[in-house]
Amino acid sequence: MGTYLDHFGLREEPFPSTPDCSVFFTGARRGEMLDALVHLITHGDGPAWVCGEEGSGKTTLCRMLLERLAGQADSVFIASHSLSPADLQAVLAEEFRVPAPVAGDPLPALRKRLVEIYLNGRQAVLLVDEAQALSAETLAAIGELSDLEIGQQKLLRIVLFSTPALGQRSQQPELRALRESLRHKFELQALDREDVAAYLMFRLRAAGYRGADLFTPAASQSIADAAHGSIGKIHVLADRALQASCDLGVRLVDLRELRQVTGGRISAPSGLAVLPPARSVPATRVGIGLLALLVGGALLFHLWSGSGTDAQPLASAPGAAASAADSSPATGAENTDGSARESANADARGASASTSPSSPPADGPASATSPRPQAVDGSVAKPAATRVTLEERIAGSEEWIRQLPDSHYFIQLVRTSAGDRATAEAVFADALRQLDPAKVHAYRSALSGRERIGVIYGDYATAGEARQALADLPPLIWGIRPYVREVRQLR
Image 1 (cartoon, rainbow, N blue to C red):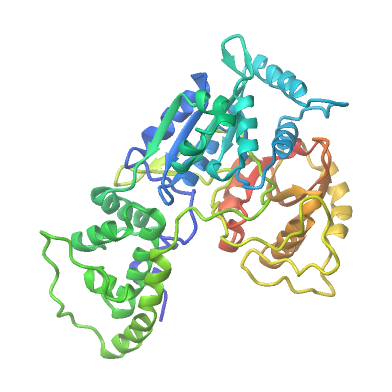
Image 2: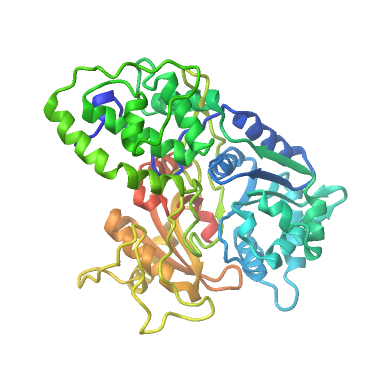
């Protein structure tokens, strides 16, 4: 069963299984919402809440916002479910380069630093993805941060991305400050039938397709009905249907192909004609293609129908926060359907693996009897006698990092607390397998007063070079949510 890329003249997969931020669909009011969020952050005064069901595209919108703010704001990105209030303050202190307090409450030192950022004419921004998964204590701490002001101006502009569940949780008495601060709400609606048809062609065009519509009206509308607007489910159905068309030797996707990959569970939408079944297809290709597709169809549909789109991130990866280190705002080239193609951003292909590496409790190192950590692709990291250890690479990277110019960029693969060493070990081992080992480095930092371990990749003179390298990382690396940072943030 050959790939369908050559069959349809595509240079890359149009419907990847992980969220792809290298292209941004501006339809269904996504573009308007992104513009409104940028304006609110640069001119507004209160936290914003972006609300959407699983699969509505919250993570992609969050990453694009991070990209657009590059050069305009000092941004911190958080996507860790296990973040405690102390961890939150440590991350902010490290990202905003706040001196570690001698003793007592760290909030005054943070406020002082935020005032300095404001007086220098910049905005300090906190973006939190999957906020509904945070603990009540951490959400309450975010509410307190939203109250930091100078005059009538907010010192920290906060945007929370979550499912509607956050609205219910915010009714808890301890979250009153957060609830009252959420003055601006943006709702991401699921894609309707018309949006899905436009989205399918947008993704195909972005992948290099230049022909007529590949999906018949009946097929695109059936995908919309079956996926209920979930972008992840749309990707699964469309990808499998394209493969089915390739195996059958046809250059169109209709209901027949969809029925094959869903075990016959797709029905024709009312009011639309369906193409007749009679098509000339080589019998040998039909036999091989249909056998594989029919055997796996029911299982694929079962997996598709129960899955969400925005996969949960690896535990503690990437150390709970990312920074918009790019020096220039994103630009987009207009495609033929009017949707903008954006450059890969500070998390570019940031989707998340649904499984976590095996890790010890956060308050202690891994024990000798702990199970071996898993790699990003779920496999067990195999020991190699000739492979350098994480500790050896940390020692070997010290001089290399010290010599890097502050204005250069690198790709942050993971950054986690020293107590969660197993996560760093797993990501480091996987990076050695998936990437150029000579470009994989590691470091230990205590800039925030808490010891952390980081694994990074590459050295790039410009933000554009770093973004391109980020976009070119193998798909298995995307799951750990890598992002671009500037070297000066390690100092």
